[in-house]
Length: 405
Ligand code: HSE
Image 1 (cartoon, rainbow, N blue to C red):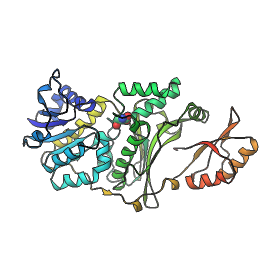
Image 2: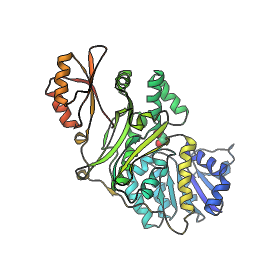
Image 3: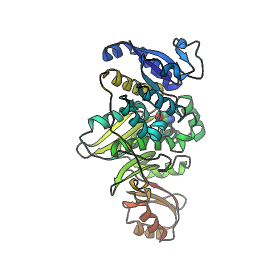
């Protein structure tokens, strides 16, 4: 019997117990032994749950039990999740987690502690919910140089944007529905302000480029400013508005950012709707690959947690290693102002204004809309250059969104 402990019995923690129970036969076959949840750490009691007798309130019960070989941390939040993870690794226990805040903030340090104590620290469920993305990038793409990663990394905001577009639904109503479905964070500000996506893109950037950026220092814009006007302009241009996390290298420095983008219909990401996530990885040998699936929710996310549990328990003779990450310095990081892409501007004005704007932004791609506005899409330019070029015309845009080609 392989003894494990669950830290945090909320949506994902209880889902993990459900997956381990529902699929116990195939899981035992895969691991070569039965997997047993010996302890569940939570502040609450669950007297009516079949595993209610496993609940403990003191993490030391778990840390001091030599039978427990693996801890699955699904508490959410930085503390005490980080402290318990660290203590478990130092006790030589393997840790798997869905906690993107801890991975994005302390991942470099925790990977190092894991290495020192011959333990594994795995976090497939921290990005993309149930979609396999961390392990494929780590193993299947190990022979490739990763050129860029772009994607819809937050299920809650994609659910909201999809309903706003298709049903004209109000932001607050859809957010409430996303919370009821168990997609949103405990504090949904992290979802709608792009903070959750920022944590996920820095994890993907670290996998791609080896340096872990501070998620609080990358350029992060959420969807709270997105209105039906953005959606209508996108529609007119044959695009969808999507909250995108993007990372690439610019002149040897790592760019990571989160922003609403216009995504043209030709890009498969534009068709990723509802709670689904879609992540495009550009690699120098493979080319472009799309990873698609449920980006949030109880059982999809639990499926990814259990994937890590199985990876560790089926390789008991050796730890599962991820390459070391270095904490990024300011010199490692590129400014979002240097990011080169096409940009869509919505501007109020007449034919003459449009002609000036088109000349400044090097484009003929312009449509007139109702209400005396026009939308134009610049040639690929850095944000700095595009804004300076437009400023030289004296025109002030109503909004500007980058375009994901
Ligand atoms: N709140 C997150 C989301 C959960 O909506 O994507 C999955 O990380």
